[in-house]
Image (cartoon, rainbow, N blue to C red; front, side):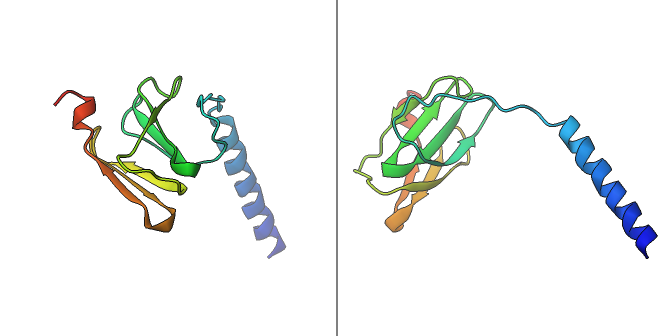
Length: 112
Protein backbone atom coordinates (compact mmCIF):
# COMPACT_ATOMS: atom_id res chain seq x y z
CA UNK A 1 0.00 0.00 0.00
CA UNK A 2 2.83 2.40 0.85
CA UNK A 3 4.33 1.81 -2.61
CA UNK A 4 1.08 2.93 -4.30
CA UNK A 5 0.91 6.10 -2.18
CA UNK A 6 4.44 7.00 -3.28
CA UNK A 7 3.51 6.54 -6.95
CA UNK A 8 0.39 8.72 -6.53
CA UNK A 9 2.41 11.37 -4.67
CA UNK A 10 5.10 11.39 -7.36
CA UNK A 11 2.48 11.68 -10.12
CA UNK A 12 0.77 14.55 -8.27
CA UNK A 13 4.09 16.35 -7.91
CA UNK A 14 4.80 16.02 -11.64
CA UNK A 15 1.38 17.46 -12.46
CA UNK A 16 2.01 20.45 -10.17
CA UNK A 17 5.47 21.06 -11.62
CA UNK A 18 4.10 20.86 -15.18
CA UNK A 19 1.33 23.37 -14.36
CA UNK A 20 3.80 25.80 -12.77
CA UNK A 21 6.14 25.68 -15.76
CA UNK A 22 3.35 26.58 -18.17
CA UNK A 23 1.73 29.25 -15.94
CA UNK A 24 1.42 32.77 -17.35
CA UNK A 25 2.73 35.79 -15.47
CA UNK A 26 0.51 38.49 -13.94
CA UNK A 27 1.14 42.20 -14.48
CA UNK A 28 -0.14 44.92 -12.15
CA UNK A 29 -2.68 47.27 -13.69
CA UNK A 30 -3.49 50.77 -12.44
CA UNK A 31 -7.25 51.34 -12.34
CA UNK A 32 -6.88 55.10 -11.83
CA UNK A 33 -9.43 54.81 -9.04
CA UNK A 34 -9.09 55.52 -5.34
CA UNK A 35 -11.36 52.54 -4.63
CA UNK A 36 -9.24 49.81 -3.09
CA UNK A 37 -11.60 46.84 -3.37
CA UNK A 38 -12.84 45.47 -6.67
CA UNK A 39 -15.17 42.50 -6.42
CA UNK A 40 -15.51 41.35 -10.01
CA UNK A 41 -14.17 41.91 -13.50
CA UNK A 42 -15.64 40.74 -16.81
CA UNK A 43 -14.26 41.00 -20.34
CA UNK A 44 -16.39 40.47 -23.46
CA UNK A 45 -13.30 40.55 -25.67
CA UNK A 46 -9.54 40.84 -25.36
CA UNK A 47 -9.87 44.62 -25.03
CA UNK A 48 -13.34 45.47 -23.65
CA UNK A 49 -14.17 44.88 -20.01
CA UNK A 50 -15.72 46.16 -16.80
CA UNK A 51 -14.79 46.04 -13.12
CA UNK A 52 -17.08 46.70 -10.15
CA UNK A 53 -16.37 47.33 -6.50
CA UNK A 54 -17.15 49.16 -3.32
CA UNK A 55 -19.22 52.36 -3.15
CA UNK A 56 -20.96 51.62 -6.45
CA UNK A 57 -17.73 51.86 -8.45
CA UNK A 58 -18.03 50.84 -12.14
CA UNK A 59 -14.96 51.00 -14.38
CA UNK A 60 -14.75 50.31 -18.12
CA UNK A 61 -11.75 49.63 -20.37
CA UNK A 62 -11.47 49.41 -24.13
CA UNK A 63 -7.72 48.77 -24.28
CA UNK A 64 -7.35 45.51 -22.37
CA UNK A 65 -7.04 47.18 -18.97
CA UNK A 66 -4.24 49.63 -19.71
CA UNK A 67 -6.61 52.50 -18.89
CA UNK A 68 -9.95 52.54 -17.08
CA UNK A 69 -12.78 55.10 -17.13
CA UNK A 70 -15.55 55.60 -14.58
CA UNK A 71 -19.07 54.74 -15.63
CA UNK A 72 -22.13 55.76 -13.67
CA UNK A 73 -25.57 54.25 -13.12
CA UNK A 74 -28.67 56.38 -13.69
CA UNK A 75 -29.30 56.15 -9.94
CA UNK A 76 -26.96 56.82 -7.03
CA UNK A 77 -25.46 53.53 -5.86
CA UNK A 78 -23.63 53.64 -2.54
CA UNK A 79 -23.63 49.87 -1.98
CA UNK A 80 -20.83 47.54 -2.92
CA UNK A 81 -21.20 46.03 -6.37
CA UNK A 82 -20.29 42.34 -6.31
CA UNK A 83 -20.75 40.94 -9.79
CA UNK A 84 -20.74 42.06 -13.42
CA UNK A 85 -21.66 40.06 -16.52
CA UNK A 86 -22.25 41.03 -20.15
CA UNK A 87 -24.14 38.90 -22.65
CA UNK A 88 -22.77 41.07 -25.48
CA UNK A 89 -20.64 44.23 -25.75
CA UNK A 90 -23.74 46.34 -25.03
CA UNK A 91 -26.00 44.22 -22.78
CA UNK A 92 -24.77 44.01 -19.19
CA UNK A 93 -25.90 43.21 -15.68
CA UNK A 94 -24.46 44.20 -12.29
CA UNK A 95 -25.52 42.92 -8.85
CA UNK A 96 -24.64 44.35 -5.48
CA UNK A 97 -25.43 44.55 -1.81
CA UNK A 98 -28.82 45.67 -0.52
CA UNK A 99 -30.66 44.25 -3.53
CA UNK A 100 -28.90 46.38 -6.14
CA UNK A 101 -29.57 45.11 -9.66
CA UNK A 102 -28.42 47.22 -12.62
CA UNK A 103 -28.91 46.63 -16.33
CA UNK A 104 -27.51 48.49 -19.33
CA UNK A 105 -27.83 48.23 -23.06
CA UNK A 106 -25.23 51.02 -23.48
CA UNK A 107 -26.77 52.02 -26.82
CA UNK A 108 -26.04 55.68 -26.10
CA UNK A 109 -22.32 54.86 -25.74
CA UNK A 110 -22.05 53.32 -29.20
CA UNK A 111 -24.16 55.88 -31.05
CA UNK A 112 -27.26 53.75 -31.70
